[in-house]
Every structure is written in structure tokens, then in C-alpha cells.
Image (cartoon, rainbow, N blue to C red):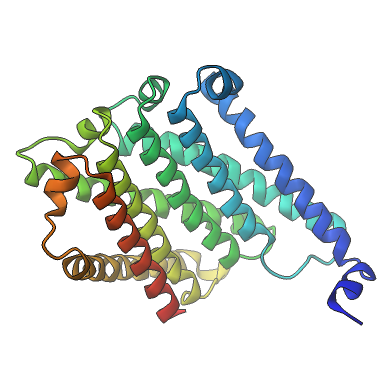
Length: 298
């Protein structure tokens, strides 16, 4: 009997259909949830005003939710169809809320020197790129906690929320680190001001770094055992291991850029000349190092 015939003759197909329906419903809900929370007519922004910046920002949120949902689907099927539907719905809704909460925290804390909604309404593509990348980075780490944690107990969702807080802390730390380096190399100029000035190259470079960090940090879920009886110790180990991976990723990325972009002044090209090509190269190197580090250690 082929795999396809086995699928059709088993109840697995019902589980797959249920998961797919819930996933599509939640992905659709993200658009309208975003519009309701931000008091924005998404149809008007996308189709009438042709606001590219809003489209990029919303795309990041939807992709982020898709990444989270892939974590909810991963693993063995539940004992019954009703439990599968409940798990998928709860994890999916938790992901939707956490991504939205993460964007709110990112707006108020990480990007505290600018008004994201106003900038995106004014078609600021740079701010939209940073917003989208932050959503994706948050989702990558949330997904790893969904795969790592097990069950429908309250402690499971505490672990997931803790993973979310860890992701937001790391994104804040990396944003401040990048801001410090940017300011030091540009006579005190703020990186957030560069976003406000619609410097797309700076946004692409920063966004690539955030996603690269998120991918590297998820390695922790493969080494830290999920133990609900010692959750604080477990989370502490997660944080320490994440910081080690963060440091390793940063060092390796710096070395790779010295080799691959030898002879190119990355800071000058990106920060002063808005060279999107060099910024994209920088992003590609960050993601490559993150994927390679993940493959080596998993």
C-alpha cells in the first residue's frame, strides 16, 4: 500500500484537514486582527492607497504567524481529533496574540524614538522592513518553544510565554547593540533616525541581523530538556545557552563578512550611501552563518 493510500485509509487525513483549516483561518484573521487593533482599514491601505510599507509590515506579521503555526503542527498527532483541534486552535491563537504583543513591545521599547504606525502610514519602507523582520524573528523563537514545550497544561503556556519574553529581551539587546555601533561609526547619529529617514539599506542590514540571531538562538531548544518540575532552572539554562549561541553567531558573522566583503567598507556603503546591494549581502551572510551554525549543532 502506498503512502497516499495509507493516508486516505486512515484518520490522519481528518487531522491534516482540520489543522489546515485552522491554519488558514488564523492566517486570514491576522490581517483583520491587525486592522482592528491598529484602527486601520487594511483594504484601503493595500488596494486603494497602494501603501507598500503597510503591505511589507503586514506580510511580516502573516509570515511570522505561519512560522508559529508550523511549530504547532509539528510532532505527533493528538489522541483524538477534538484534542488536535483544541491544541492547534490554542497554540495558533497564542501565536497570533504573542506576535501582535511582540510588535507592540518592539514599537514602544526597541523603537522608542519613532512612531511606527505614523511612519508606515507615510509609506516609510525602512520602518516597515524592520517591523516585518522583528515579527519574523519573534516568530522563529516562539516556534522553537512550541516544538520544545509539550501538552496543554497551564505550565506549557507559561513556558511558551517565557520563551516569548526571552525573544523580546534578545531583540531589544541586539537593537541597542546595533544602535551603539551605528552611533559610534556615524558621529552620534541615531540608527532609529536612519529608519525615520527611510534608509532602506540600514533597515535591511538590521533586519537580517535580527532574524539571524533568532535562528541561532533556537538551537537552545535542542539541548535544553523541557522539565516542568524545574521550569525556572530550565529557562535559566535556555537563556545562558542562547547567549552563548548569540556570541558565537556574532563572532562568526563578523569573520565571514571580513572574508566575503573584503575591500568593501560596509558601514560607509550602508549607513551613508544607502547601498541596498551591500546591505542585502550583509543580510545573506548573517542568515547563512545562522543556518550553518544550526546545521552543525543540531
